[in-house]
Length: 450
Image (tube, rainbow, N blue to C red; front, top):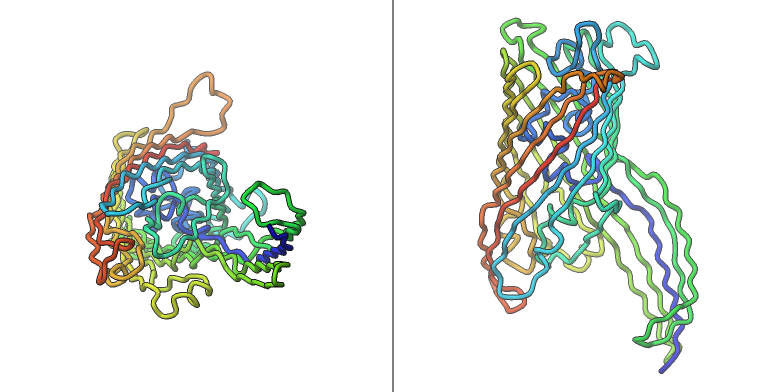
């Protein structure tokens, strides 16, 4: 069997991960916090805790005259430390007359750490800046993997917002400011991304099915790369018009994000016949589109109602340039979607709140993009949720604690509307099929107010 000299050189020019952080993370598919999930993720106008970093960064600058800010009558507890866990159990089905891996590795779990800190602890802000906090969110897969790349052929059957597609580390941070007694505010944040470059060289390989230990050389430099931007703003019209007292309006924008290892150069020289072969490939995954959200919330008595309208520009969907070269102008087109979200919070007593929510999300994959060779699996879905928020009483054995603790537990149910795919030219490898299902999500966490 002939001996070969194989030179494999992998050059990673750039890698972008993010979302509104690192896209299609757990938060983009399910929600960022126990309270957010319970309220149908209708949080843009009303959020003011650590999860503002995801829902609307300007919420970090909203601490004045807000019933969600904890106070004991003498002190407002504006600083927060939060720990949460989310578990997702999809029960999907695909009725197809061939083997498929679409239903593999769908269950996921994520550990979330969040925090918010009053900037006045470090620097006294001018009087017109009534609120100012910095916030951070860190999300880790519960198996402690950083990212699970799933850049597969678009012809493969793949639920592209579940399972491995939502398993990536998420790091987001930013700051929010409230002005003029929190009559209005704004915030700016970024999602942490990693990138780098490097190469691997392997030599003295032979053509054999037996395990080998070739001479290897590897060098990689990982670095912080360009970060997707988040912007948010809010206004409270009731400060100017008494009839609108209790109304909040919010706006949030998250820049598109994706992971892109732009170029793999694999160069092989085979001694036999002096044949040279070069393979050029790339990786692209975790795409999340530009997202714009407008929200309204209204508080009256013990009731808070919230409504969001979110636009996700899936028409901006990208693939690697190598995928473009391979499929030319035949790539599937995706539709922009508008997602209405509704949340209801009812205060039962001083310690307990009941939370409920609903939203409807239309599929971004039109029928025309599934009739040919491509198989992106995405359904219209109805999403309902509920939860309970409970403020723990002070306990004697916890007398050393500096502030109260809030516990929140939530449940989310996603109903994926069954979808029939009729191919224009069905084959044994690419037949007609039907798919749908349900997804159950449980999330719980605590917030330590300081």
